[in-house]
Image (tube, rainbow, N blue to C red):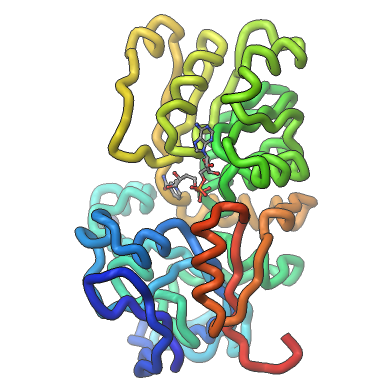
Length: 347
Ligand code: NAD
Ligand code: ZN
């Protein structure tokens, strides 16, 4: 089969023929239709410090995908050949303290598809049956391909009650864009989104932001005054990883406000003044991955009841054009980028 492989400890990926994976007794074999490129894949492609410390080449990369069931292990039931599926990319042990408590996203022994074992950028992938998620008919192939990052957005956005609340989303990357649509869908009042990229701010506006601003040009205080917000944001969703954005968020929250942190800061972090958290009585919560599988349930039911995140998908490439997909992601004027693996001509 074809696969995008990290062949050695150096930058780059290569499209190669590799052996087909063989499902174990509890696995499902999936024929991959479409994949999407994530920031994690870019770290691996570039071979930065995180990748060098985490990845063991040779390995097939990628974890955002959808496809159809092509086979099942001897112990697996409940799937049919050709059924449309995606999968949770965190494989968990089921035995540790957190797994047994129903907090599988905090599993002590998590194995990441396309990070710790062969991934989805291939014609075929093998996934434990417990991780496979059947895709409802109403959800098209493109959206089914991005359920993994939509799950990050869903998990973060549903962390706090947003009904009637004023919400600040810092970072209009794909996840911030999708969070905007979710916040609108569940009934937030004012939604203000910040980013430093005008292309991405425009998509956030399409997805329902009341204001989408570059905070270097338009101070948040100005936007809040325009929206008649007198006391600050009720809920903050940090989705940029930028220290400046987190500081702006803390400074713009209402006393007693709630912050969810998804964005992963780089190493050059400016310290937080904890007095700002304490005297404002802020709740700050870290968000990791997706709840298994409550997040998957919530996001698919929202998609079935009117949530539309389709403007987040901005680019499509065929497998042989994969370098273009990575170049588009590097350039930054993009939302989600889809790579099509299908070989049939009517694609
Ligand atoms: P992304 O890098 O595409 O988006 C981040 C956005 O933040 C970019 O559009 C960038 O222009 C913007 N930005 C930079 N500086 C800013 C500033 N000062 N103010 C406002 N915006 C600013 O990432 P993504 O794929 O949308 O993911 C969002 C974040 O979530 C990333 O940090 C990612 O690493 C992280 N993440 C965390 C988890 C988790 O489980 N915690 C999972 C997936 C992604
Ligand atoms: Zn576990």
